[in-house]
Length: 270
Image 1 (cartoon, rainbow, N blue to C red):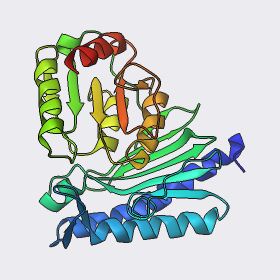
Image 2 (image 1 turned 135 degrees about the horizontal axis):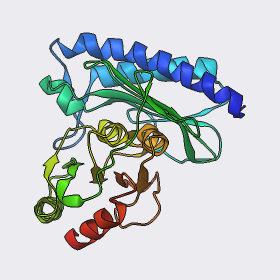
Image 3 (image 1 turned 90 degrees about the horizontal axis):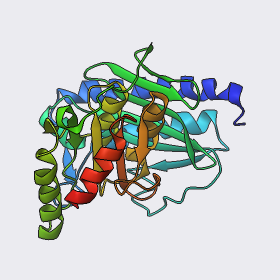
């Protein structure tokens, strides 16, 4: 089921359904949205829900024996246990706040883990028409062209991306802003794009040199991006410098040249 030669099929199916969901997002992007709150600032729209239904129905039809984890369904029901079985991990619309505001950093993120290892990744931004893809061991691509991480070797000339997250309690905000304040002294500048998946893709194609986020929603934010970064020659790790854990809601990424200095800067900023 998960033999090497079938990974191409998994990718093709994921790309196909990502583009279908992307078309739904593209049409809705320019229309009035019906918005609900999942938390104080975390939003969900009808488009999130309809895209997840579309994606999972398509994948379940093709791969009925596979497992499925998605932001709007399994997460809402508290079911996010990851097993060794082939598991599709989906964020149907990463960057919902951007989507609601008409800011074009939104995407569909579809990752496949096999034996808990991110193996196939597809991230599609339908507004900018950028399709990031990767298969474990076969490289990463943007719109079919090979991509690789930057060759930046110093923090002081590196561009860092992060996210503010969705929690607004004082302790979390103070920790977030203190970390940013500390890091701003050490890097060229900081960006917040509003999509964890696209932040990782920015690392993969060399637009961004450093990325971290603590407290993101769940594995659906990183399952696809982790494969894409790795296959573009980048490194995925915990902000502490330890190994990346897809279930830990903590991630950092960079090219290999700045990883050690980045981890040191993150530890000093904590």
